[in-house]
Length: 310
Image (tube, rainbow, N blue to C red; front, side, top):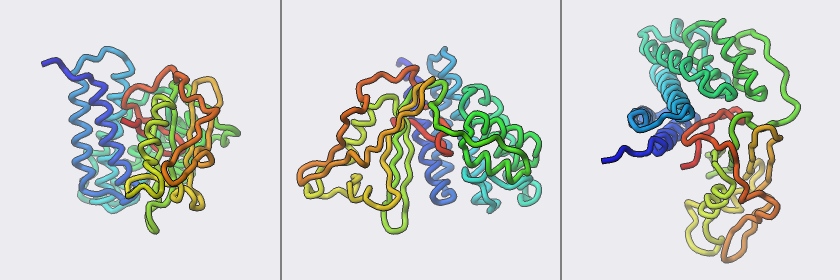
């Protein structure tokens, strides 16, 4: 039986880690996180066994393994040690020594440091790996190394508020904030941001990567569903969802060497009794985005880890 394309496993690993990120961010972790991390690692193992000779696949594997290790550490710190650990301001300096008397987080912290270090050069332009290395080093108490990692993250993404907040917490200087938003310097891709109230208590803020604008259009055509009078829409995004204050449906197109192109899709949304649709006039739907984002590759954008749509 021929080996499955490793790209499929990389996408599946990313899907599992995206679910982990949501649970950790929204609910401070749940037991389901452990199973999702195990799934992600299984798919990484399967991808590694498949035929892959290109450097980008190896880099994506290293990054996904480091993300899985960081999420495993974050889960045990939140659930077992009962300390803060998030992507808003990082974690506690030497939380391992001060708060983890049983040392349950020690092997996970050591693994998180090793995997992040191994993946640090995999994408020398993205801030995700130095940021996650800084988190793990902060937890273990290596203040100087954590500062260096966070400063590298901020060098790669000067607008990352978590790296900036972590440096302030560690009493270290941070670079000046950027004046304008520029594209990712290595890969071309589309980023869709959807922010709206799911109900009276839950706020959704999803950032998803796509390899083409055409894929974004296809995704939204399914997500928006039928018109407001065409039956149940419990699983569909509606114009009413996007009417709330602060709601956002925005497309960001990144092409190396160019400013980020931004399109307010909420302003282009139209509804009638039969259908809901977006006016794509003037949006480069059929334009190729090159060089493409490698399958399964997560990125750090808008101070969040973003995963590709599968």
